[in-house]
Length: 589
Ligand SMILES: Cc1cc2nc3c(=O)[nH]c(=O)nc-3n(C[C@H](O)[C@H](O)[C@H](O)COP(=O)(O)OP(=O)(O)OC[C@H]3O[C@@H](n4cnc5c(N)ncnc54)[C@H](O)[C@@H]3O)c2cc1C
Image (cartoon, rainbow, N blue to C red; front, top):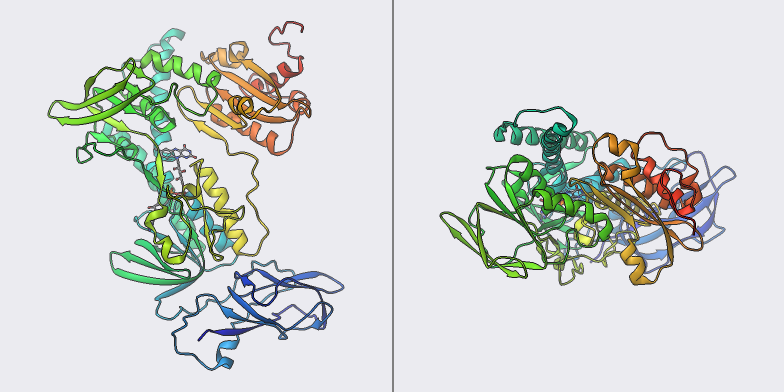
């Protein structure tokens, strides 16, 4: 038997006999907790009354123009996840979900009382979040800030996911060190010579770990302040409203009204390689800094591989890179990658493009690697090999099938613009829902899922997710790439400003950069931008804002930028497109 509950008008302040101006649900509708049920209008305010729980509407007992007061029954509903086999209590006892105190000014986000664990479960949460990466912890914190009781499930002891523990943050901590080493070397050309750096690998790893510890510890503190309960263990969905967590202390079952799947992604492996040999590393292994190999092979010329190549080069390794496609950083415009390729060619022992690794054999003397591709040797032996060929989503490892959640053949979970999966009360965010697999996409999606659960009308409608390679030089791009515009037949004009004409870039001795902006041909609005050069990752944010605000070439060209800065190059690129730039000579057309 199912649990039927009555949903009443909650506390709406000092108002009685308030008009119903809208009824948003009908019998048979599946609704999530916090979905709006009816709208009331008094002479002072309009109030949406949210559903206190998820379930299916049985009968709507009010209509438009009815007048209601606190305690009047709006509808009856069958609760989601009600245990059909559980012993049924008399209906009167079940009828009243504990009432949310809903002041007049409330949004659908006011805190609600805790529901009791569903039949057989150890705990209950209004929102369960599976995975504590940037997507998961953001979703959990936002949901808690919106008044929800939240349980955050994480298989590791520290929260923060890939990004904080083995991704964005540790890699950037090491890249900063690499940058300083390189900059001091290059100061010789400015007349200042430093001695050869002495590298204490343990201390460097310790610094990186301290940064991770500060951030993950900070997150744990933020979770506790928000009363987000963290449950450690491997989570596995067992139904659309329950999840089982296998941890150190056994199995815990949690029932939930809503779940947000934020289980992220895992390093992709090429089958048949000797993964039991520590000298064959993935990005996590490379970030551990076990040793500085004399010769390092990086398999994969994408962002992660190139960032680690920069780190190990600066620490003293001789680095080779092998990439399957014809160029480094596939997907990015070639004019932006060219300055990076030039700099990498200068320090790398080899860059083999259009080539692949077919075999790796572990020998005492090193890892013997076999190649296939023009220009690559048949075999070569390296002290260590870093495999950086991408990441695959964790969709197939979380029991999604038990909840009826669709997972595609690659392991991605399809979602709509509100991060909803095909199951009404289950949402998914971050790497597990698709490309680009980036932390800032995950956090943005996390907020949306939490807000939708809390009854807000939030949608994922970002115009772009910027990409950044924190390499030396940095490469950053957003919106439509020039390649994409050509393929899709989008008519555009462009402004390109070479940094060789930027006083600031010359003064820091790095003039290889480039700032490019694409404008839609008729409207002159910005549709894409790319930057290569020092701090490109910081500079691209202005382009993203311009795109989101619908800025056109004039808006950017007429915005006074501080001088001398690298940010000026964004202004100058728009002036180039306009034909008004005086910092370079543009022949008359
Ligand atoms: C070396 C490296 C550098 C990177 N640099 C950047 C960068 O500079 N900028 C950027 O934007 N992105 C970067 N990324 C990508 C970024 O880390 C990811 O896009 C981001 O972490 C994805 O966030 P997420 O919340 O989707 O999942 P994740 O961060 O992957 O977190 C998922 C969490 O779920 C947990 N989990 C999974 N399954 C279960 C389960 N069954 N039970 C319990 N817990 C589970 C995992 O342990 C993990 O903690 C980098 C990645 C790597 C590897």
